[in-house]
Length: 289
Image (tube, rainbow, N blue to C red; front, side, top):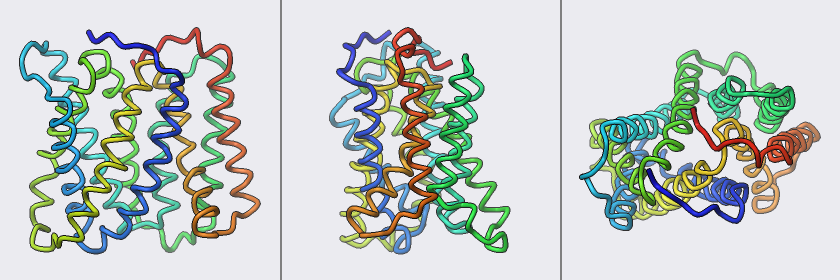
C-alpha cells in the first residue's frame, strides 16, 4: 500500500484540476470537428499514456491481483467515460450533456452521504450545475435519447473513475496506477480511434498533445493525489465547481455575459463546496468505497 504525505490543501488540488480541464476543453472543442470524438480521445490518451509512463516508469511486477483489478477498472472507466461524453456532444447541446453527466458523481455522493448536511450539499451542487449549464433553457425538441444515454453512461463511468482512482492511490506508489490505467484506457479506445489516423494533421497532433496535458495528465494526477485525502463523497460534490469555472472563464476571457440564473448556480456550487469542506471534513476518512 502506498504511503503519501498529506498535501497542503486537497481543495487546492481539485481547483487546479478544474481550471486545467477548462483550458483542455476549449482546445478539444477545436479538435473534435477535425478528427471526430473517438479520434480526439485516442490522440489525447496516446500522448497522456506516453507522458505518464515516461515519468512514472511503472513496474509491472510486485502488484497483487486486487491491484491489477483496480487498474483495469480504472482504465476502463477512463476510456469509456471520455468516449461516451465526447460522443454525447454529437447528439446533445453541451449544457444538457454536462448536466446529465454530473448525475454520476452526484449520485455517488448521495449514496455515500452520512449526514443531512451532505444531502443539502448534493442538492445545492445539482441545482447549481443545472442553472450554470442552462440545461432548462434547451428546447425538448433538440434533446435526443441517444445523447442522453451516452451522457448518462459517461456519468456512470465518472462515478466509477472516482472510486477506482481513490483505490489506485492507495494500492500503488506515486502515479504508477494512473499510468497503467491510462494505458488500459488507450487500449479500449484505440480500435475506434485508429479510423481517424488519416485525418491527423500536424496541427491536430499538437492540439492532441496540449489536450493530453491539460485534460488528462495534469488533472487526473491532481485528482488522484486529492482522493488520497478526500472521500469520494466530498470529491463528487467538489466536481460541481467545473461548470462554474467554465462559466467564469467564459466571462473573464471571452467576455460572455453571465445571467442571473448562472450567478445563482455559481453561488450554489460554492455553497456546496463550503458545506462539504467544513470543519467536520477533517474527521472524515478518505475512503472511496
